[in-house]
Image (cartoon, rainbow, N blue to C red):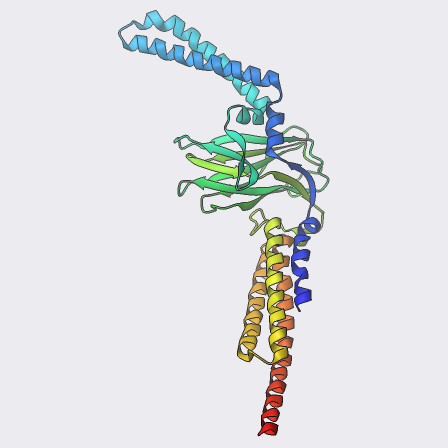
Length: 361
């Protein structure tokens, strides 16, 4: 029993490799460097931002002059010029944002690669109090090497925010001919204080698209007074015709990494308990403890089986329902059949003990 259960961790950890194919991985340090490496973009944006700030101050000065007693006609001409120039600069800034969306987030410091909890992450912080969320484009993937109709962007996040606030992660898929991006999003909220998995999953066949996407954009809509940390992300795709294998939900119960840890630790613990049962049974000791432990493991196996069936019915991926169903089958099968065998063993030990007492008496 111990030997068999020891394989649970290994098989569970392998589930990720079997259930999906990794197309590309993106580390935020690399993304940030690529986004701001275009010196002309950085220089243009910096120049436009400084010009916009100067025009805003000039507009404020003119309006202050008017409120201090100046006639409107005295400031009307310079105010019109200021407003016209402001409109021109705003249009230029919008064009830069449109052409280089994720560069702006990094240039302005709204998205910053950091180390948190010993791991690389992207920190996005919204310090505003306005009701409108902070909208940022974090990553643009041009011509992704996707060959399957169903694909996803996966990672983990940590959310720090005030109660009742909520934000959204979004992936937009753009197909040829040029059209509006098709969304796949997932809400994230403050209930999740530690690292939690997410999967932005899109099915191009279900959306009526026959070819791969020409571009993907990863966006975030961050609520006021909120901070989100995003782990490095993976672009994955799923083999066609295996929906039972990889699932079809964006709301994962846990990540592949967590599945490997749970399977490994759970398999080791159950295996050690099996070894303890074998030792105690072989010595004829702890009958009540051993029989009770077997019954508890049978009950645990039933609960795991119910959870595994529910995960499968809810279209959770292989890395979720497999670590539940495998130990369920092993626990119920081995412990149920072993219960009668072990009970007979203890009866034989008791009989030999009584025979030894009779012989000694």
